[in-house]
Length: 144
Image (tube, rainbow, N blue to C red):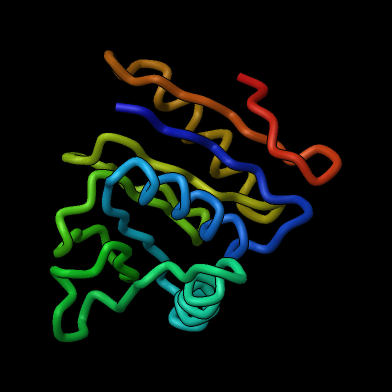
């Protein structure tokens, strides 16, 4: 299991979700994006549909018909009706990602203390690989 911590500083959460989603789908995997905030999920959905000039990232809400067929599912809880192997916690709140291969915790200054606590709490988890990413000059760098 891998958990990636992404500290948001310059780009909004929806742009970072789209960046990660492109990579996950490029690997042939499915994705669950979790946020309690409906307005944040709507902003993420819009960003995914307009991810690039020649592409879009199809997505849908977990409570909509056909949710199981969506490559990217947006939800307010950690339930992957689409069989996702990867999950993004877009609202900065970590949940126990059992059954997922990889989790991404996106956090900003307001959720940074909780992210630090989560990082420390995961120290004791066997078989868990953690990484930390920070945006420097517009480019994402893996620092740990």
